[in-house]
Image (tube, rainbow over all chains, first blue to last red):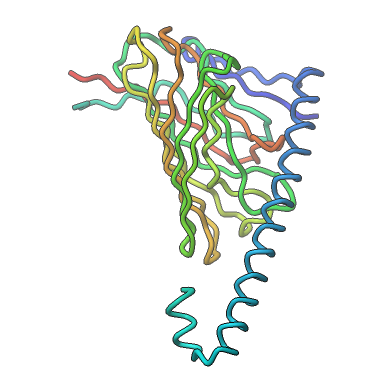
Length: 74
Length: 174
């Protein structure tokens, strides 16, 4: 059971209660969104890495050394 | 310049919890500081993104500006008119190094003033990894009410794990 904690600063009382149905639904939606965001970020990183490798390979065919390519691309 | 820190309330989780709320915050200080040491159980990622709300408000009256770095890349982003401050993307999740806990500080100046409420946040991921994140966030809650409660949760639907600790301090300016 997933719970929420509330700390009453006046009384010091700590209340632990189960999440409401709305809160559970919101958490499930947030989890799905987070998973989608993580996948999108991973795909973007993979695409960037592939583009960088492609650029390095093309620069190498033009005669640039590895140090020169690194100076250009970081 | 504040010269006193007073512990208002604290809690160390004995079991996991989806959210932690400090309620009935006394109106006897000048500024508030929240310090958190914790991690969440969100699986499939090393970093979670926390969210923060004041007085239970989920209206679209928050703004955020974030600066993030991980040792190899840095980025910045901003959002306005959003329903939550969620710029805390340097919080350990399930895939972070075992038994490490992130540190987070939230500073809320002039929480009683009849003006919009700025907030600054600093979070550092404690992950034994070359890409551990650090995030600095400037936030604004466009509401002139005194802050009486602070809600903190995972933005990814996860829960804070047992052992996560939450401390709320009040600061007086004299």
